[in-house]
Image 1 (cartoon, rainbow, N blue to C red):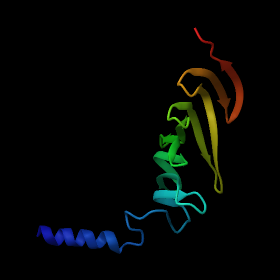
Image 2 (image 1 turned 30 degrees about the vertical axis):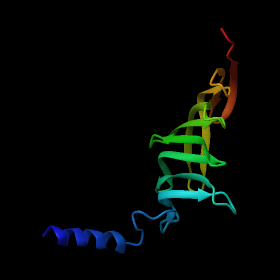
Image 3 (image 1 turned 180 degrees about the horizontal axis):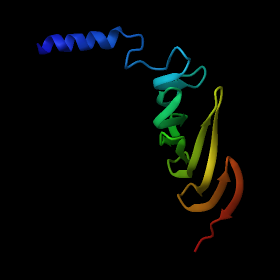
Length: 144
């Protein structure tokens, strides 16, 4: 009985319109679904990779520059995004939160609240504060 169930399950997985392991799938409403990997134009270098459900990013999205991760976005599922930018040496450059506001035709990514800025050695050098994507305050961090 078990082999028959396995065969039915495998046939079911590969007979659907959107195989569960395919990349860059858009549904009938043209919404992004599943795993996505996008490349820079005319190259084989990855620009970003992540997962989507109904056009909304899920979990973590990785952005690449010259083969290395330069930004990670952690999605809470409620429109909140914790974002980290990296220096070329892999140290954190900038870290803070953003919100994703979606309308019928557009998505708006807005920085929100305090963002921490670091130099290439990892030293905290500045705090920036944003409200609805607008920079409203900058505080330089002075060494002790």
